[in-house]
Amino acid sequence: MTHPPHAENVLVVIAHPDDESFGLGAIIDAFIGQGSVAKVLCLTRGEASTLGAHPELSAQRERELSTACDALGVDSFELCDFPDGGLAEMERQQLVGRVEQAVAGFEPHLILTFDPLEGVTGHRDHRAATEAAMTVAKARRIPILGWALPEEVASTVNEEFGTGLAGYPADELDLTLEVVRDVQMQAVRAHTSQAVPGSLLWRRLELLGDREYLRNL
Ligand SMILES: [Zn+2]
Image 1: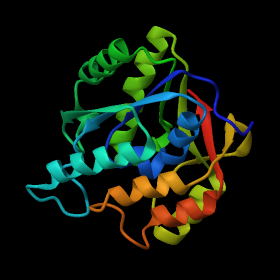
Image 2: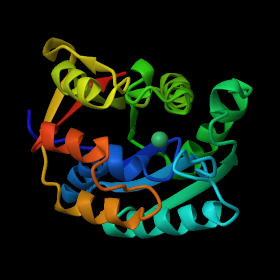
Image 3: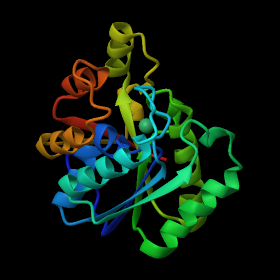
Image 4: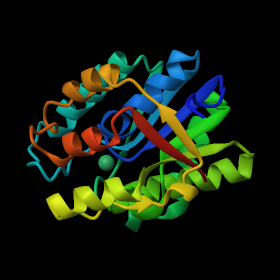
């Protein structure tokens, strides 16, 4: 398969401003390209970025998310005030309730998020966001797809950067999409506080080439 499944409304559930672009940008673009309406629910303002937090960072990252969503053609986004870096420690029901609220307002036919295995990048916030999305998807019987990496891409990046990316063998990846990255790259450039040249993001995108992989969660 090379196209995303048909879904009129797609709710994208992420932990941080930039996850929609760095992680899911090409996939969101593929959905919108075939007629889906996408909404992004971002659970934190990304105020605790490892690249250097400062008082203005939260507002800057909201502007960056807004610009990135425009570049991707995302219909709307909601930004929540849950603590960046602290999602895994939160009362789970609070996150679930927030995803429920977004689902009730948007009535998605599909939810798109990160794969729960180490939250793809090893960030615990990613996993917490995904688990909340999975809980709501199961209760409401909404199909949910998780963005995942092939194990060879994950292990190559891990060897080169000493990171903890998680990947899957080919037979555990349910969908392979053929993607074009131009729109994703525009969205990535909107996140000027985060897109550091030479970072592992670029290497991962290079290794993925024109493919992205999804799992049915
Ligand atoms: Zn993130």
